[in-house]
Amino acid sequence: MMRCTRDGVRYLKIFKLLKERPQQLEVFWVALLKEVTLRFYAFMFTGLAILIVLYILYVQSSAARPDLVTIPAGVFQYRPAGDFRRDKRVTDAPYQERRIATGIEIMKYPVSVKDYAACVNDGSCNQVASEGSNNMPQTGVSYLDAVIYAEWLSEITGQTWRLPKDEEWVRAAGERFHDDAISISSDDPSDRWLAEYKANMANRDGTLAELRVLGGYGHNSLGIADLSGAVWEWTQTCMKNGTLTANGFTLHVSSEYCGVRLAEGRHRAFVIDFVRDAKVGGCAVGLPPDYLGFRLVRQKIF
Image (cartoon, rainbow, N blue to C red):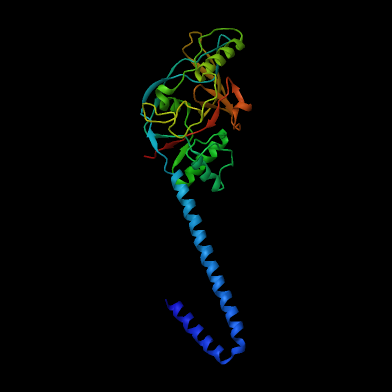
């Protein structure tokens, strides 16, 4: 208010002086127009900058508040994924008892086009192609892209976000999980690979899955949406090699190769970590996923 008063008095003095000196009136009006124009543009740019900041904060806050579902704690039977052998024959891993502790929450929906775009616009995530509207799942992302998004979300929320372990994803999927066990025994690995290919084709009806909006593939009994729909979801689980004991009940993991990660969907698929579209190459084993996407888990701090 004081500033406005001082400016008004100054302009009145100048105007009175100019009335006494008409030759300077034109110069005055030009100078006044310039000052008013500069202040107008300064006001407009400031307002625009504020709106941009508010929009970014809104989009980020939307991405930072995903719907979550708690994975029930408890013990369950889990079959590890990988390349396992018994008496030098490729075979299925045996079921193992696994425990999920409390404090793990998983996103109800896969990461959407809108949520991923917030990370891209913030300058943190890699630009990738997307299909459909903001309410579609983000596809065409590699394991490495998903990890970067998790790091970004952790930074802006102050929480710990990460890709799920495979056993966590299986527990969350419940009845939507497709066991990939193949009851075949052969000295020729190609016999098993062919059987796996046929089983994968059967799970997918031999067609490319249709991308749908979030929730388009329904919810499982835990209320988690779109599991085993069109999108295969990255997990942090690495490709494993190992052997079974003669009785087939004990599994010894001999090595892990973390340049290949497990994607879960209508069937399991091991995919090279930098691949964004496994249909054009990069699927290490079996039939490639139709689309690659992800959802994250949030780790609670007690």
